[in-house]
Structure formats: structure tokens, C-alpha cells
Length: 290
Image (tube, rainbow, N blue to C red; front, side, top):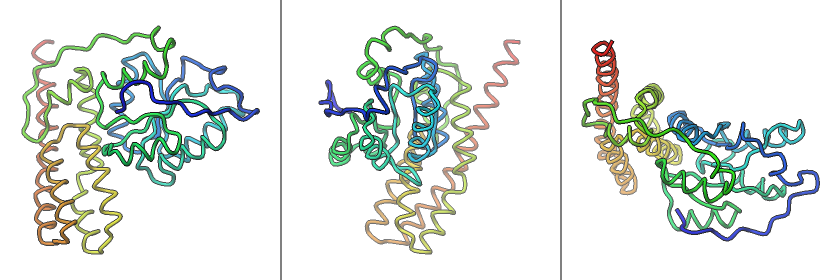
């Protein structure tokens, strides 16, 4: 993420939009365009820990339409938008371009698992103020909030982080890192893991089918999505396998790619086992303290 205060573009809202900050409401401050439910769970929790409410949108188009509707019906408008870059229908770059062209003047922070110098420059070229690398923790998020919400955010304070529970770690998930990211909240960690398993447990088969069909753009999109979600739950082995899959695809080595996909299938099964172990451990802890 860029350090210091990035230069703000000289934007003037259209006359009919006036200043977005005139309608600022603490009840609904942060709008988030993010299509992955695993990421939604952790982002919502981190925002709530800073006493900030949020609205989530599955893509950039839904956010743009809702913004126009919110203004027309005098509903609460966002003070800050967190915008995932890789989304269906309308991605973060396209949505930000539309918002800036319409004259809306509020901070937009991009969310991406691949914050290369080229991507950061592209974001600024299209009016995006800053970039947060996924997965982010409460400290990088708080720094971002302080920079763009300023005096308003400084009046808000969230609850202190809960201590880390004594739950056995599994090789497939770095549980201490995951728990630290969600401020020690067992329920949030379990929810994120459950969503990951339910959403992506068949992804290796999906990738295998796409490989057989030579649908390489779709493969790259799914790999990118998986990398973001796997990083959010600290599934480090799976992350390495996804990078190996990318390398095999770059080398056009289908045999290596299929071998990696077989390992990934086993890893998804291990993550599901890890989830079961964590749930059982939490249940046993509750019984012992009852």
C-alpha cells in the first residue's frame, strides 16, 4: 500500500450530487464491492471491530446503481468505498471510472491480491486513491481508515481484540494467523473456513474441466479468486499449489498442471478435515467450561 497521503485528484461533484459528505451517516459508512463471500465475512468483521457498519455489493455495477438510488431516495451515502478489482459484470477499475466520470468525490480504495506497481499505477490513473493488499489485517485497515475518514474515524473505537483460543493447528490452515486476522473471534474464523469449503471444495474439478476445454482466461480468473480466498483463511499449502499451477500453465505443461490439480484436490479435503477438527475442539471446550 502506498505510504503517506496520496495526491488527490481535483474532482468537482456534479451539481445534482453536491457533496457526498453532507449526507454522511455513521449508520452506513463503508461500501464494499466484493464478490467472494469468504472475504466478505472477514472484511465485515474487521469493520465492525472499528464500530463501522458496511454494505456489500457482488460487483461494481450493483454498487454504482445502488449509489444512484441512494442519492435519489436520500439514503445514507458512503464515506469510503472498498473496491475489489477482480469482479464479474463490472470490475473495480471500470466501476471507479464510471463513478469518477459522474463526478462523485469520495475515497476509493482498491482491494487486490496482486498489488504490482503496474496495477497500482492503473488504479491511480482511473481515480482510485489507494490500494490495500489482500488479505489485510486490522492494522493496515485501520491505517487506511484513519487516512481517509480522518476526524470522523478518530471519534470511533472498537472493542479490544479477544485472546486467541487454544485450538489445535492443522497443517493445511495456519490457524493462529487466521485467528489473529479476525481478532481472535472463533465464530468468524469458523464461518470463513465453512464458506471456503462450501464454495471451493469442487474447484480442482472445475479447473480440470476448464483445462481440458482450453479455457485459459477462465482458469486464470478462478486461480486469482482462489488465491484471494485461500490467503484470507491462511491456507498456505493451497496457495503454493495455486502458484505451481500458474507456473505449469505458463510453461504449457498440461501434465504438470494435472498433477498439481490432483494435489489440490487432496488439499481441499484436508482443509475440510481441519474445519471439522476446529469445530469439534470448540465444542469440547464449551462442554468443559459449561
